[in-house]
Amino acid sequence: MTSANLLVLLVLVMGPVLASFFATVAERLPAGRPLSGRSRCDSCARPLGALSLVPILSYFLLRGRCRRCGAPIPRRLLFFELAGLGLAVHVLLIMGPSPLALVSLVFALTLLAVAVIDVRHLYIPDVLSLPLIPAGLAVALFEPRLDVTAHFIGAVAGFALMWFVAWSYRRLRGREGLGGGDAKLMAAGGAWVAWEGLPLVLLIASASGLLFVAILRLAGRRLALQDAIPFAPFLAFAIWMVWLHAPPLAGG
Ligand SMILES: [Zn+2]
Image 1 (cartoon, rainbow, N blue to C red):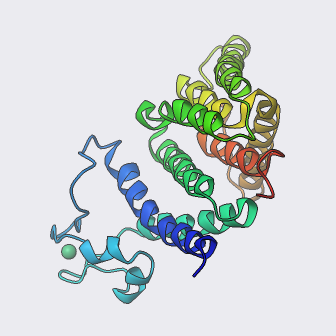
Image 2 (image 1 turned 60 degrees about the vertical axis):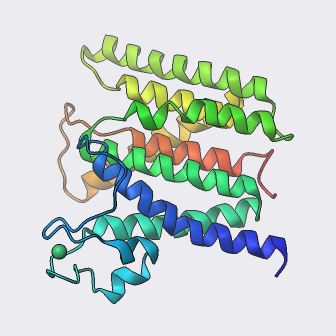
């Protein structure tokens, strides 16, 4: 087996495996529970050991139920693991097998955890968004195709841009529309996509956000102006798309 094939296999396996870790993070972080320790059944506390070892398949083998007490295992775990596999395929198709692909996979899953937490709890944990800033700068420093200065400017400009959008919104509407968490996430985005990528991130995030609201309307959901719509999922999606498809890296 060539080393390229080995890397393909590694990324494909790590997708669901890392995803089940990030599913745990998304579950425990907002609840203030420690991240270490094995996943347990919510009903009988039996450790879900086999589940985390063989993601996806084990869910179907157990028919989504705890083997001891039969309580349903949260769908979210399966959602994360399938998403992990999908992201692994996505990153391999665009970047090809490389150590950077593996790093990008971890980046993607962190963004996914951020998005899920914002949807369920309407906040973005600093402990997930802030480390992405030095991580993005480190990747830019070690990746010869990237210019670390542009990425540093991106982090600063991303924070300033989002802070300005939030400030304008507050001035216009007289209430909070975007949180400081969005500004920190945009700083992380800037560290990864550099300042040149920021306008596209903002465009994709706003367009996908508006599309989502339009779909909700078509589906008959009335949205009041004061309804809180988490912005992190759209921001995370936009950052991921620009990171993966931006000219310096796309095509291997
Ligand atoms: Zn159980």
